[in-house]
Amino acid sequence: MIDTIEDIKEISQKLKKRAISEGFTIAGIASIPGSSRIKLRTNALERWLSNNHHAEMKWMEAERRKNIGSLLENAKSVLSVGFNYISSHKSNNLFKVGKFSQGEDYHKVIYKKLKNVGKWINLVIPDCKWKICVDTSPLLEKAWAEESGLGWIGKNSNLINKKNGSWITLGFILLTKDLIPDKPHQSLCGKCDICIEHCPTKAIVEPFVIQSDLCIAYHTIESREKTIPKKIEKNLNGWVAGCDICQDVCPWNKTVPYNNTFETTPKEWIRNLNVNSLNWNDKTWAKHLKGSTLKRIKPWMWRRNIKANLGKK
Image 1 (cartoon, one colour):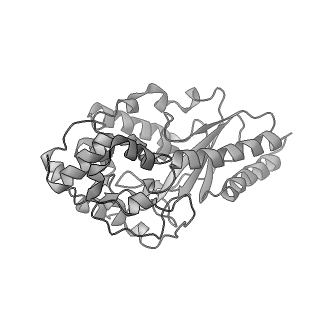
Image 2 (cartoon, rainbow, N blue to C red):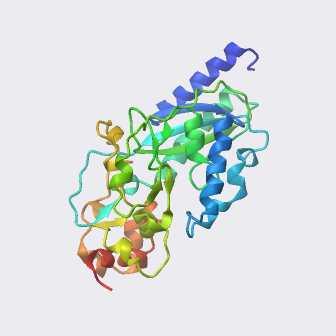
């Protein structure tokens, strides 16, 4: 049993260490319902939605996203983890794919690692219930990661860590046990506006605010429109799945450590993606996309994105 504050401190530290031992780069803890900044982040989400900046991403409107307690009854703490996905493997292809999606499906990678952490919780805190959340759950992920001290939400809306930059995907475990929270991280963007200045479509309409229908990543991954708008098409510059420009230029991403594991190694077909892919049928696309986050982009969308880069109809 966990009876004293010293017991709670010890188990909190061990929980984070366990997460790191599973292959996560960073780990932190926040108490539920969190500090006042969670309310501020929730209000910011509501403003973003009311301005329709989420475009066709209607799932962002889920009310449960504003109430972490709705995801697990009697949740008292959240373990936040970050997985470093940046690989040293470079690609000089005509067609560019967002780095987060070049390796194994990060949803499955993170879930598997968190499942192992959950098994550890069952042994060490047997009276604690827990729930895993990856980014398919209606959770204010970056806000809770910031609350847990993993980093801060940058002006490009990505979570940034001092050592690992923004090349991290997030995962969470909600727990029905009070743990010792880490200190929420403060923003270190300062006066830097490099990400805003370099966005070719001006999708960062103000610091921390992304207008999705101006974002290359949105149009290549989420949009189900039959064609890419002209104002986006002329700025694609090779991007067919996502866009890393606002991260590539970020000063915090200049000297980050690589994670050269099989999980982050770019798949061969991505490294060799070229115009011949326009000849692939749906079955070939399905074969390549198996085990990839990029399944979200349907074969017809790949063709649309590639043709837009080539100026074809």
